[in-house]
Length: 83
Length: 496
Ligand code: SF4
Image (tube, rainbow over all chains, first blue to last red; front, side, top):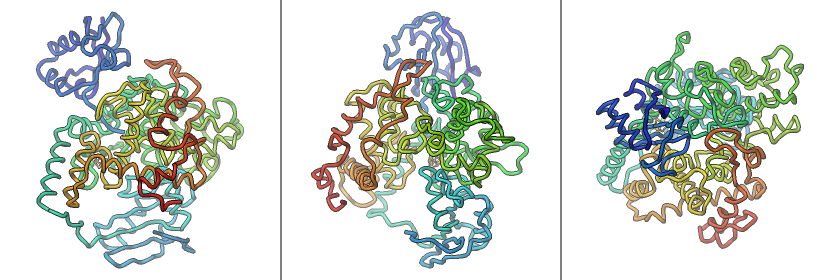
């Protein structure tokens, strides 16, 4: 199981901040989440996102093909700014 | 330009072309909101705008801010003490002339509409920022492992969520309050049920400075501490992190419990600390007097300046530079000291704007990005725009705005050149004031002690690698001075 932490609008749509999902890649995980949380969630992801595996952005790993394994923590954010 | 010093407290009243220096004895010692209300009533013009200092500035605290609209601050570098040193409590302005006229009004308004639309449709500027405010950053910075905790002893905080923008929206938020004419509207108005009035803020930096950095997860305390800073006229980053430094000095036994007597123990996590000590700092009473001039003076007075998390004696903001190498370079080279907003590398290193960089990347490409960010920000600042527009706009957009307003034909390179000129002029000023390469540095902890946990465990800020490359890219000498040829290239040969 992969531990998934959702933030901001994504947590709001899912009505959950944390969920456990079985998935072997980042893209498979996103597909599963969209199935569970529906069209609104999928749309929100399409607007862009920040996807971390154990605190490292998948852009610096293998993108959506980044492999996931049992016990990994994934954090997903919509596009965010501030400062 | 305000020169000299008044004999007794005064304020300056500007109404159109009319300028008066008026007595301010009756508001000296007063909090910021009362000062604003009193002076606005006194001049009898509701739309008068006021910049003033609170007790912190009057008592020449080196971390005092200049406040305007009650809760907005020109916070950093102790500018409040400059007003205090002149006995100048406030500047009250009533404008009577219109805004300057663009070269081609129609064209300018068309470009403005285009850029405002771009901001409105931007997922950050038009979405996340107004919805959750700047504190939406708390979770993402913490998950990336660079949310400093307990005076930068570590950079992950287990209870970060409790103080995040999401938690604030759920628990205390009443509404947004955009600054004048802003299409983004990130600012927050919160309500604590027992206070008659609503309070503004806190922003992300403040949440961190009074939260994670003090080991406090309680958002209620943070909101109150922010409100106290606004009323007393303190820079929230410097005030919070000075307390964090004091807590580490106390934890390590350098500040002895006997010294505090009956005042609250400076333990990490003690929520009484900010609420009790902020007023004491502003009025220089009790142990507050020791902390009134910021963390560097405090730590130095105990013989441990290395425990002040500052650069050029200005307290560092809410991101650990051991994780974001570009930001570490920005902290060390920023002309006004340890500051994030003059080159907000978190944007490319963590958030992905204008393009994504690996935070640990310390190659020349990253260092070029630091330079470009510093240049662009200097331009945006000089235009008088909010730097949060930089989440949706970039140098081409600012070029379009400038060209449309002035009827110019600047290129992107010309615009970057304007920023570069500003950056170099500031640097030249600092050099004249006695700063050297030795000041372009960070606290020893961040250069030598590895991050103890999180995704970037084991990392330090690799300034020894990035700084020489940065000097080279800037066309400066190895010792950080600016060659005369560079000054003349920028048209700054007159500045000696
Ligand atoms: S001007 Fe800047 S700080 Fe003020 S509300 Fe707009 S985006 Fe926020």
